[in-house]
Amino acid sequence: MRIARFTTGDDPVYGLVDGAGEKIAEITGDPLYTRIELTGATHLVEDVRLLAPVIPRSKVVGIGKNYADHAAEMGGDVPEEPLMFLVPNTAVVGPGDPVVLPPQSSEVHYEGELAVVIGRLCKDVEPEDALGVVFGYTCANDVTARDLQRSDGQWARAKGFDTFCPLGPWVETDLDVSSLRVVTRRDGEVVQDGTTADMVHGVAALVSHASRAFTLLPGDVILTGTPAGVGPVVAGQRVEVEIEGIGTLSNPFVEP
Ligand code: MG
Image (tube, rainbow, N blue to C red):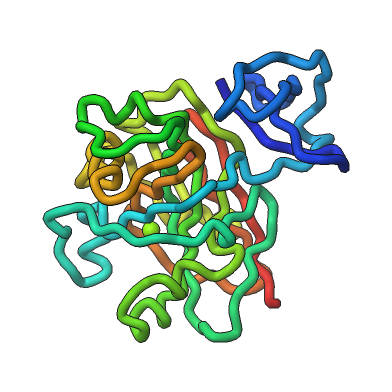
């Protein structure tokens, strides 16, 4: 299933998106917590405003340097264990929402990534059980103020600014993510073209690793790292993250 969160002008609701990504069938409640029941109302995707498909209840867990080619372009080795950081949920925005470039940075980069949405409360999950706690997958842009990442020495500010974590366009719940193409475009030009098959630590290992440090809650999100090709983005440009089997997340970048 593809589950979107959207508004037609009133309170946000959820819906099931068809395979072509053209129609949404509205459902009751929040599918993370309640059984999925259709309301009978349907919409064209182009007629609604898609929102972030999930608002992480407690945290976004980021993973750094999880593709060898990206670790190399950053001038470092692949960490032996997954390298984790936290992004506040206030950084999350949805498809089409503007990413606001902060005046504190003069070097903001895009990072196209597969995002994992956790489906149930869990702790100390074994890798072989880890995919069972996953609700689904969406696209993410792990926007990073690269200059502040270097100067701060840790990553909270560089990756945590408001609007720095676009998610969407929807959550795909039935997907084998072991080998999916991840393509990022800046103003239409392909700047990243990787595959999740090149992750150093796969999704199951990442979920397990994160759960050994943090209790994971429904709606928590894990960003799985970016392939090579990160680069700058400036006001007026648009970045698209397309993941095979999910769809395309597109966001404009703007001055405050
Ligand atoms: Mg990243």
